[in-house]
Amino acid sequence: MTPTHRCRPAGALRRAALAAAAWALAGCAAIQAHDNATTYVRPGGTGDQQKAAAAVEIQRARAQNIALQDEKLQRERELKRTEDRLRDMEAEVARQDKALADALRAKQVSQARANDLKREMDNIRSEMQQIDLQNKAAAIGKADPAADRAKEERLKALEARKKSLETSLAQLVGTKR
Image 1 (cartoon, rainbow, N blue to C red):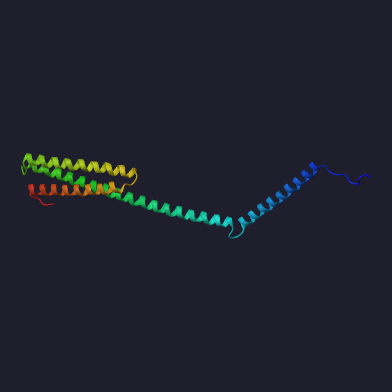
Image 2: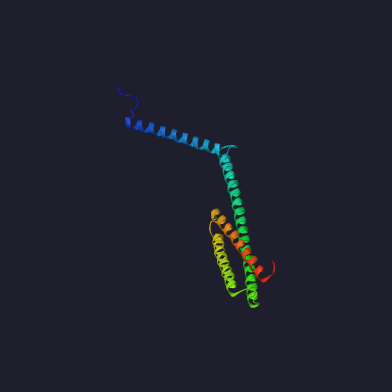
């Protein structure tokens, strides 16, 4: 008896089964890719969620940028005020220096006292130059609140010394300022 059908070798069946399985898996992967794409574009899907998260991040970055710009503007104003104060103080010390020279020429003050006052003026000028340099360095550097407070204290002390010098000079020459 002869068989009416031919048997396939076992290897060929395995290859056919593997090909069918691979084809089925490829179909599943295509379906999964389609499902992922559908989920991404669906309203409220992954795409919308990512867009919303990006919009929130952009808003946060804009708010931070505005805050930094405000901080920079405030810092520039503070540095400008300090610069103006120093310039005004320098003008006052220059006027006092001229008044002292005039008083010395008019013999309203002794040479020794004039030298003492002149030395104090020079000390004040030196301190003003140091504060000015610190102010200029602060303009190009990072903000340092502790250094800013110390600078402000130095300025107040310097203004008090200048006022005391002005009072002493006014008493010596007999004028009130």
